[in-house]
Image 1 (cartoon, rainbow, N blue to C red):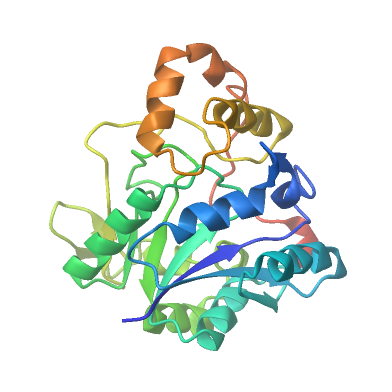
Image 2: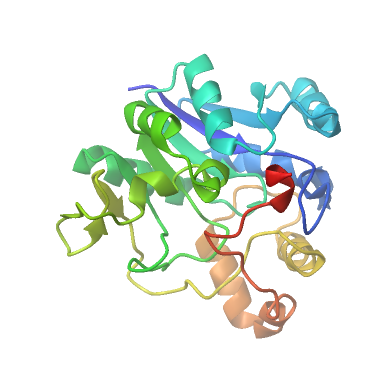
Length: 265
């Protein structure tokens, strides 16, 4: 099965515009995400999915300079952007990564993909909203689905948050829930959640604000010039330096229901 990691990336972030190209220890954040995702052994290709908006010409320019495969699609209908990207690059399995996760871990990606393949499900993730739970830090988010499941979501999903957040149509509970081993609720699709044995879901390592960026820059400063450190290395660092966690402790994490109101205009 051809497994393609698709990294969604655009310049028009509502809280931190242009964040995907902001500098992190001498490299644009998007490059950090691509290079770390490329280290995943169970991914055949890594593609950047950006938009046709002129503001994202800068994203395309970076991809062209670095030789990153890319696709340009809808600005606000991210589900359509993913579907068209997956179709263009012949993906049979899609791994969803976002460009604001510069600490994304190839080992976590590989584990999520492996669990997906072993279970033979439609969708797997290492974090989901209630009634599921998050046990990995925010910023290691990995979602995996079949092309068939993505295509069905693309055809049928019509709620704004389904179109913007790509995968909710696959896992939001419905009246025909199924029960998977371990007691997790699923939607009409077969869903599996990958959990860590210790709950670190309260840790925030994504970049959505200036405070988030400051934290990630300080983390990278402890691993100068490297992209091979793991999330467990970061965990050990923040446990030994609890003051790091205070940098973005007041940042409110977005919820699944939060959508960009500009898309409805």
